[in-house]
Length: 223
Image (cartoon, rainbow, N blue to C red; front, top):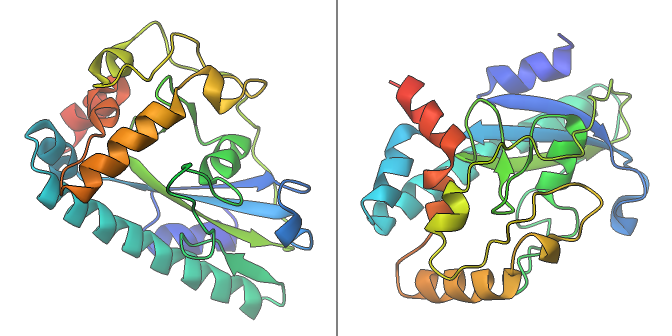
């Protein structure tokens, strides 16, 4: 294991992968290599969702986002100490557009290109180990990295748990592959409007995350 990956895992990341992201974001043309950071959500977070206790869920979720942000910033400093340029792609820096659920360079893109997982029917990132019970971040750099093998097709089976759990029927039957547009697998307008409305009222959704079959398998293993 290389020293950078070893460092990031030692700081608490659950999974780390490397990808070629050259040409994917004009703002970062000089930083063509992407580092995907995955942090699993604890079992209690999924239980909060299942119990509709969204105040506790969001508190737990945002704590994990903050934790992963610190790992990314430490990774940025580590890379710079090695003499390379780096930019931790934190949520604030990635300028996420909550109205359209868009960012400059989606974390999911770096993650799938790193070979850490794929996009589920729900358009959430899915890992074989944790299902979709994860939060993501990234680092961009010009440090030479050994890229993972990109995952370009869904590895979900015929499970439709997330589709059936969606309260606004936003999830289409079409499985993801990297040749499709996001709109081919999910009605992002219906999903976004519902999520934003729920969040404004102190509620939430994320049923697609908690009902994912692989998320459920992760919960059975997690103490």
